[in-house]
View 1 (cartoon, helix red, strand yellow):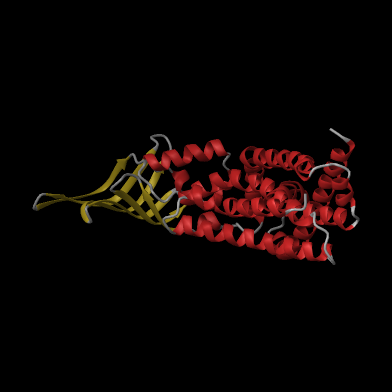
View 2: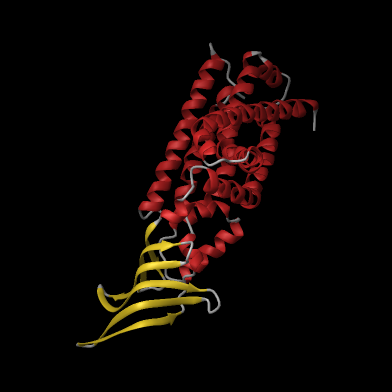
Length: 359
């Protein structure tokens, strides 16, 4: 690479990591302000706060907003180059605009690979430690033990409901298993409680009754206790939606396959998480192109104007991302399409800006 390339790459990386450092410092201060009462009341050890929580909190918050801060960083340092006429000198010196993009794209792709690998492999492992700390000392404390009204779909037409579950004794209360075909209940099994049998890997049902429809007739029965093996273990009752943050992408894919095999159709939130881990890092490349294209033209009060425009575009990207995600989880929009919609829209903006950029 030429000296000019290394000059731009250095500016890119130094500005980005400085921005991330400032973001992390501000985020830590805000987070400490919100959680200091929890830390004190739950007697959280100082070492655990620093090592288990904040050393894993920093990459979590950093990766969440990294592409946006890449964009803002490129807007900032490129607008400075433009205001100092350095970009104009490069173009007048025979360096084409598209050749000028090489160091930007090299750095953006390098960061994209780094973000994607961290998202898919390393961050979930860090999140396990962070979430374990939060459950013990902070915001997620008692969330697992306080959840009620569990619903599971274990087959195309088979559903399970449990009113409440005690994680300490592995006992569920007011258990119901139903089979519904063509909007008609064909089978129902109810029990006062269910307890996990560790040795037999199944459930002991107490004070149970059942009703099964056979043609025009119903078969009814009851008993004191019985044993049943279900495709739902005690771990399912302890699971929270945020547990997907602790799964590597390989584990998340297998979890989705298992849920589909059970007939569970409520997996869109997990599919969104799976595709998001690739789509968000990839946005680094698109946002870098937009930042370069919009800041290489020198205008009056350019730096301030560019920074404001950059903040507005960053906000628009986040809003579009949130809206499309909600439509995927709550509506009929494909999770894959929903996650990539912001990149598609901003990709079009990037192409238009590149065509209009000074050459």
